[in-house]
Length: 191
Image (cartoon, rainbow, N blue to C red; front, side):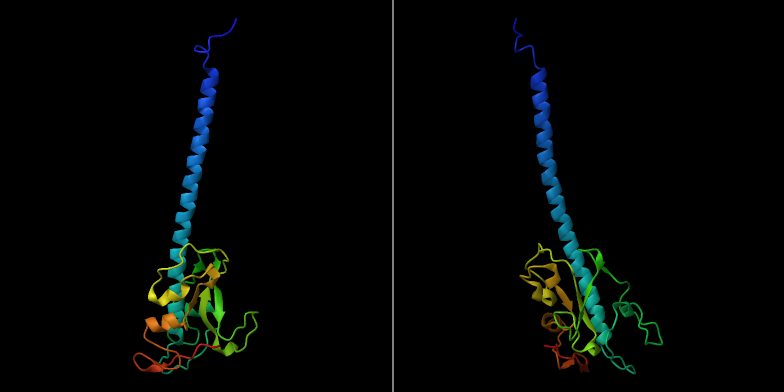
């Protein structure tokens, strides 16, 4: 004798529960993807903030001060407290980590060749960049001091350089000419 299909619904309940699990999995996957995108955007914004802070501190390091000779920045930790100054001079509150890699920023050294050899180490550190080769989400609509970043394909191409043309133009200075306020000339950008 056959069971009445209307009275036997144990198989139907199992299929309905299985469909609910599949739908919940799909929804959870889209939420995780959206959350990942939000977190990457937050890390990009933090990268822009931290890179600008370090770049501005490096620019202040190279700004001439009365009674002190201008000297190259040989280590980023000197931005925390200038070792050559009798008074406590701080250019940066703390050394930031790269938010994309959670490691130290890669210093940009004036006169460095792409292979890493130094052509003129006396010029010192002039900026920082990320070590990440990942593609950024943001590819346009940058502020004036970062307009060099437009259409860059990797985070490592975002160079926070105190001698970049965009940054110098945003503060009203040009390489080889005196800065606003009559300060000494900014050294030209090496070729």
